[in-house]
Image (cartoon, helix red, strand yellow):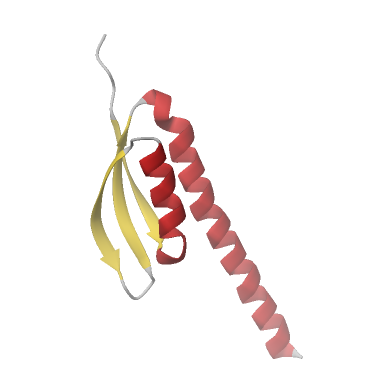
Length: 84
């Protein structure tokens, strides 16, 4: 049976890069940096993984998602303060 490799790009904010990298390294997920966006502060990482490694990819995506949610909450708090 042939192993299916899935490729995906992750837009990883610089602030959580180390946490995402730890997940990828701990799970032996093949990855490479394919781009950067200095203005928005993220790095594009291409990952290649097998079905058994999906949970690790989901964990990395959750780290990124949580970061964005926290960032949005902080932006809303700043807007509320500006209105006062």
